[in-house]
Amino acid sequence: MPRLNGPVRFRGGGFSPRDNGWASAGTLLGLVALWQLGASAGLIKSLFLPPPVAICAALYHLAISGELWRHLSASLMRLGIGWVTGTIFGIGMGLAVGLWSAFRSPGMAVVAALFPIPKIALVPLFIIWFGIGEGSKIATLAFGVFFPTVIATAGGVDNVSRGLIRMGQSFGLSTWAIVRTIILPGALPAILSGFRVTTSIAIVLLVAAEMIGAEQGIGAFVLSAGNLYDTDNLLAGIVVLSVMGLIVAWVIGRLERALLAWR
Amino acid sequence: MSGLRLALNGVCHAYRDLTVLDGIDLTAEPGEVSVLVGPSGCGKSTLLGIMGGMLLPSAGTVTVSGDIAADCLNPLSYVFQDFSLLPWRSVAGNIELVLGKCPSRAERVAEVLALTGLTEFADAWPRQLSGGMRQRVGIARALAVRPACLLMDEPLSALDAQTRDLLLDEFSSIIARAGTTTIYVTHNLNEAVRLGQQIVVLSRRPGRIRDIVRIDRPLAGRGARDPDLLAIEENLWRMIRDDAAAAERERIDAPA
Ligand SMILES: Nc1ncnc2c1ncn2[C@@H]1O[C@H](COP(=O)(O)OP(=O)(O)O)[C@@H](O)[C@H]1O
Ligand SMILES: [Mg+2]
Image (cartoon, rainbow over all chains, first blue to last red; front, top):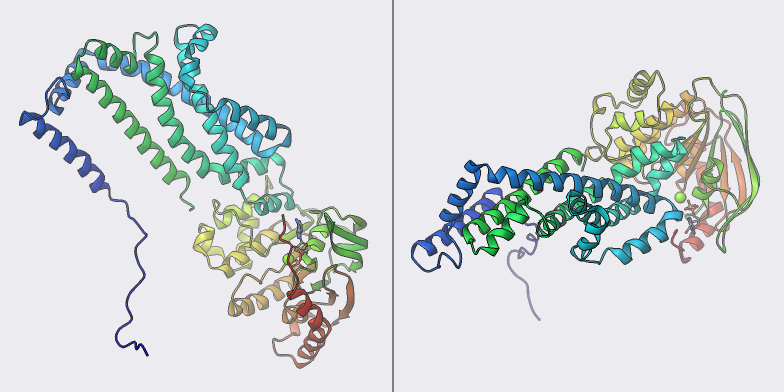
C-alpha cells in the first residue's frame, strides 16, 4: 500500500504576473543598445536599417529646422479632432444601442456591416464627400474610431448590473439620472479600454490618410522620405509615431487610474 | 403609528408559464412590521417587487393609502439582499444619490450615517467595507429618503451568522424607532419572530398564503432566546418544513 510520509508538497502560487516599469523601459533600451552595437560593429548596413544614432541625428535636425513641429502639429490636430468626433458619436450611439430596443438591432446591424470595412478603402470616397483637405482625413479617423467605440460602449452598458438600475428606479431617479450616475460610470471601464484600441486605430488611419494627398503630417513626411529611400528620416518619422502611441497609452493609463480608483 | 397601509388583492404572478404567486390577499397595517417567510423560490422577492411597484402583477391589485410626511422623498423604499451599492460612489455618495437636489441633503446624510454608526466611513468605497457595513449603508440609504414604507428583501441573508445576529438587533431597534410600515422578507424564522408583528407564511411555489401568525409584542422586548418566541419559531418551522424540503429538491428555473 502506498504511504505518505513527510511535509506536504506546496502546489499553489503562480498565475499572478506583476507589472514592472523598469523591465519595460530596460527592455526597450536594451534592444536599442543591441541595435546600435550591431550597426557600430558593421553587422547592419546603414541603408538597410539606419542605426539609432543616425535616427537621433535626423530627429535633431527635424526639430531645430522646425519641420518636426510643422508635421507633428498637423497630425495631432487631425488625430485630436478625428478621435474626439468619432468617440463622441460612438459613445452616443453605443448608449442608444445599449439602452433602447429601437436602436439596438438596427444599430448593431449597421455596425456589423460597416465595422469590418478597411476604412482606408473609403478614403477616395471621403475625398469626394469632404474634399481633399482636412475634411476627408478627419472623417477617415472619426469613422474608424466610431465603430469600435460603439461596440465597447454598448458592451459596457450591457454589463451594468440590472440590479443597480432597478435600485435607481426604486428610489425614484429619473432616466437621465440613472444614465448619468449608474449606466455611464458602470460602462466607463469598458469605454476606457475601448480608448486603448481606438487610439491605436486612429494613429494607423492618420498615417494612411496622410499618405493620400497631404503635404503636412507625419504620414506625409514618412511617405516622402520613403520615396527618396531616405531611411534616416523614414525611421525618425516612425519613432515619432511610436512615441505618440506610447504617450497616448500612458495618458489613458493615468485616466483609468484616476477615474477607476473605486475598483 | 405612522406610515402607509398596503393592501394586496388577489395578486398573481407568472414569469412566462411559471406561476410564482397565486391569489395573494394581504394587508400591511400602518407602522406594523409584516414578515414574509417561505421556502426559497416561493415568490417572496417577486411579491416584494410587486408591492413596491417594481414588477407588474399578472393579476390583482396593490393599493397604498395613508398620509406621507412632507419631507418624504420616496414613500416606498427598498433594502436589498445584495446591498446594491454603487461601487464607484463613496458611502456618503451612495446616500446622496437617492436624495437628488434635496436642500437638506448634507444634514440627512450625516443623520443616517450617525444612526447606523457609519460616520467615520463616509468617504470609504463600498469595496473597503465588510458585508455588515455595506448593509448598514443599505438601510441608511433607505431611511435617508424618510420613507413611509420600508421594503426589505432578505437584508441579512448575504451575511455570516455572527454579523447577522448583530445586525438583527440593530435593525430591530432602527425599525422600531422609525415606526414606518415595514415589509421584511426572509427565509430565516428567527428573524421572523424577532421582527414580525404579522408573519405571513407562504407555501412553496406557486406561493399562496398558508397562514398568518400574529405576535402582538413590541420589538423592543424581544430577546434572541425568548422562550415564547422560540416556541413560535418551532411552530413556524413545523408549518413550512415539508414545503421547504420539497422546494429544495425542485428544479430551479434560473431567473432571466
Ligand atoms: N425574472 C424572472 N424570470 C423568470 N423566472 C423568475 C424571474 N425571477 C424569479 N423567477 C423565478 O420565480 C420563482 C420565485 O422567485 P423569487 O420571487 O425570487 O423567490 P424567493 O425570493 O422566494 O426566493 C423562482 O423559481 C425563480 O426562479
Ligand atoms: Mg428572494
